[in-house]
Image (tube, rainbow, N blue to C red; front, side):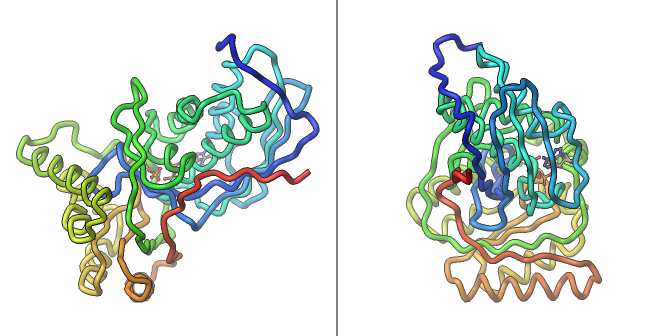
Length: 319
Ligand SMILES: Nc1ncnc2c1ncn2[C@@H]1O[C@H](COP(=O)(O)OP(=O)(O)O)[C@@H](O)[C@H]1O
Ligand SMILES: N[C@@H](CCOP(=O)(O)O)C(=O)O
C-alpha cells in the first residue's frame, strides 16, 4: 500500500471510458512493442460506491465472468484497491466491441480502461506506470503471464516499447502517419493457448535476425522511414509457429504486400492480421483482399480500416 497518496474520491460522478483496441508485438517485437488503434474500442461505465467491493456487469453477448478475480477488469481493480488506504467500492459496466480472443487486445482494453477510470474517480493519485502495473494483473488472468505490450499503448496511446516489465521501463515512440488494415477472422485464439505452443528456446541465428528487425522497426518509426519499417516487419521466431492456427494467413500477407502494404503480420496472438500502409487507397484495397480471402474460405470476418490512436483510454463524465 502507498501511504502518501492524495486520494480525492468523486462519489457523485459517473464516467465512461473509451478503451481502444491494440496491436501487440508489431510482428517482430514479441511482448515488447504495441500500438493503439482508432477502431474498434470498448466502453466502460464506472462509478464509486461507499459499499466496498467490485461489482461488474456486462452489456454484451460474450458471457464473460463477473466474479472480480476472474474478470480481467476486476483483477486489475483488485490490485489497484490494495494500493489505497481507505476501502471504496467500484461499480462497472463493460460493453465490449473488441471480441475476446481476437488478438486485438480485448483483455487489455478492459484491464486498462478499468484502472484508468478508477484512477480518475479517485482524483488521479496514480502515475501511468502504476496503472500499467495494476492492469498487468488482468493480463495475468487472461494469458497466464504479465505482459504490458497491449496495456501500455491502450493507456498511453501511440506506439510503445516496453524495454522491461520488472522494473517497468516504458518508451513512447513517435511514428509517421500510417494506415492500418485489420482483419479479424471470426475464430477464437486464446492468448494463453497461443503462448503455450511457442518454442522455449531460440537459435542464435534467429535471435540475431530478430534483433536486427526490432532495432530496424524502432529506427524506422523514429526516422519516419517507411521503407525501413516495411522491411523490418519480419518475424522469424513466433509467426512461423502461430500462423499455423490462422487459416488464410499466408495468402492475406502475400496479396496485401503485392497490393502495396509496407508489411504486417499476426496482431497480438491472433487470429487477427494487420497490415500497415502509407496511403488510404492501399489500405482500402487490402481490406477488399482480406474480405475476399475469408469469403473464399467460408469463414466470417470483420475488417477495420483505421489508423494509430494517439490518445489511449479516454474518460468522459456522463453523470
Ligand atoms: N473483461 C474481459 N474482457 C476480455 N476478456 C476477458 C475479460 N475478463 C476475462 N476475460 C477472459 O480473457 C480471455 C481473453 O483474453 P485473450 O485471450 O488475451 O484475448 P485477446 O487476444 O482478445 O486479448 C478469455 O478467456 C476471456 O474469458
Ligand atoms: N505479446 C502477447 C500479446 C497478446 O495480445 P492479444 O491481443 O492476443 O491479447 C502475445 O503475443 O502473446
